Image (tube, rainbow, N blue to C red):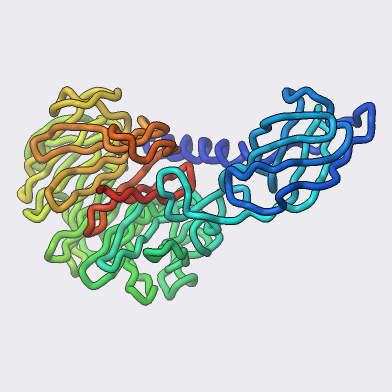
Length: 436
């Protein structure tokens, strides 16, 4: 199916991204002269530090020379026979400096990488692909798909590739709330198991609700890390109580003021509702397609994201239809913005998206969209006017956040101050953008 295919493509893309910094193959042949590295200066520093590498027989052709800091390739600024000047890349971390000359690898001293907060796009946490807890860029994620924020400013992440739910404090300290290896198990903390958790939402008591995609279930985590299953069981489509209900790859969840959980049931192309006691019903949708209308007369094609306003209207990121849909509390579906695939700002149907994935609302009921295929964050006013808030590589229209690079933004969330948080799936990062 299209949804499964899209996930596999995301995984392949993420693998390519993660492998691009793996360093050179260690099978180069020897050169004509003995090449050696004697010293590096300085021996420590943050990203963009200019490092002088002193040694012998480097040659003078910068086109055949590569420099790696702990396996991450830096930029070569200049080359002389006894000196190479290179720049430390972002996220290199502490490790040996190595030089590759025509495939020949020369090991040098260790460079100590100093972590700072001076990342483009205000990266809150994350670095290379992995599962490490820790501070800021010392922490690692593996395909972070969903993001949500509690009233105290803690950020929760559906870390899909690690099958874990992670927690980030406001100062960037990352820990694991629940989950371990992939599987299905209720329980405390790491005893619990998920299978590619994709979307998150929180209630007023700080409980976290999880769209557990490949377990076809909606899970609940208490603030203390106790995991239970609210509804769902095997893959399928059925309304009913608790485990009698069935979902097909639920991607996202949202909660209303009464504690009712709304589910973007992507594989079933429906929007579902779960009462606090676990009774599941269908609000809108039927077979895949595109149609506005009431209840089952409406059609979606891969609803990936969902958010609710104060009046109980649901907003859906309709991924394959490249549209943002609106559903009233009684199930009337309309299209707020979007049309065919593309990238265009504008009013309503004049706007274009490329795979809208995650959606969030601010206090003024503006919508924020993680536009996955366009690598951007879009904004939609209540009247349906679409603009681009954060443009990958160039930042915003007014010059803020220049240098931001997304690699598949999959979800977006806002805190009470209007700060925008983005789950950058294939970049394995969580971004933070204060809106001044």
